[in-house]
Image (cartoon, rainbow, N blue to C red; front, side, top):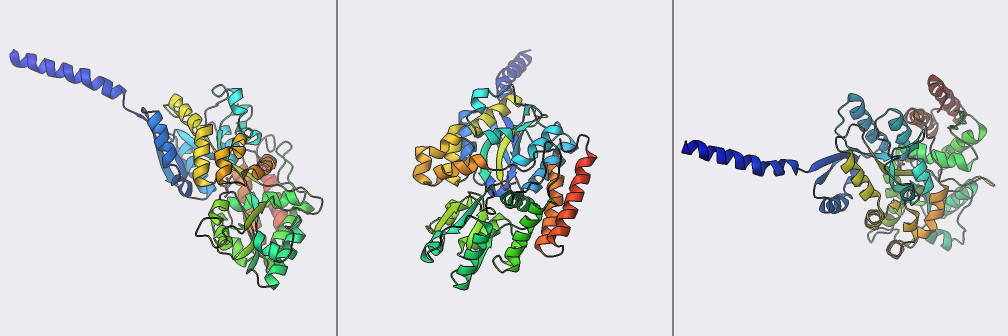
Length: 422
Ligand code: GLC
């Protein structure tokens, strides 16, 4: 009897003490992120977990190319039971993920006043058919980098047009000031499609009109845009290797002093000016050039967070995405990494400007950047474009042939979906 009593006491005390322990087990929120960026996240995670003891963030490292990360999320959601609670999304994925029903609509969860604190186009990029599916974190827009030391020594002004960019490149190459003129990402992947958007815009063309589903790839401005890129290789201004370069290969070449001009995202600026960089202090940035009278158009990129519809922890997930996109987290992250914020006030923030004095000048580019077509079939449309751009860059097809085929396939793709591109 005594033994029984003791057992009962033991059991009761286990039940009593174990219960709170069980209910207090932290909730874990998982999400996938590009490896290159994942290494920059530990500080955010630490801070968030310190402020939210009941929530853990589990960051899963994915490959670097954005389309490969997209494929991994897509496969996980298609298979059902996706292991992700948060979805760290490139701006181009939103319509597809939202249309597929993989994301929670955040419209009622985020106050209008809070949304007004972000760059308008970044918020717009998170919307689909009236819903809101992504809170912006870091934005992105491409820039033209140039060697201000070389231009100044030669008494040349920075270029405004594609022709001027070619002339300056050839001039400085002829004087053996640099091995190459212009380096750009021509590899068959999303980076090339993003870059093409701005060369296209600079020539006055368009890719897909999201309202009407009209395709502009076989129109003269689009063919001229491809011709221009191809001519940089044919005329020896760009190395033939650009057809296989992603952003980081482009950056390596420019940063080692091998080129006068580079097209890249803002992340490259602090790296080009790092203490061990051969071009430290010799680099300037400006918006991408355009055809005479044309408009310069930086491609709008950028990353933000959504919540997977299948998560069992929507409250905690909301808390996490609000923390991550907050002013303070963005400030800390941008100070550490040199990425660019999605909150306009940070471009004039005293701490940011003390570290990056060029940020105020970036805001105008951020506000004018051009979205890639915001349509659910974006991934397939981009895939078509990438294939034909690659064929034209490497000389397998002429710019006309390549763009005619790209336009035909894109029209077939959009026609397959009811209601055109919508
Ligand atoms: C950057 C941009 C993203 C774009 C990608 C292409 O990560 O932020 O929007 O799709 O580059 O490589």
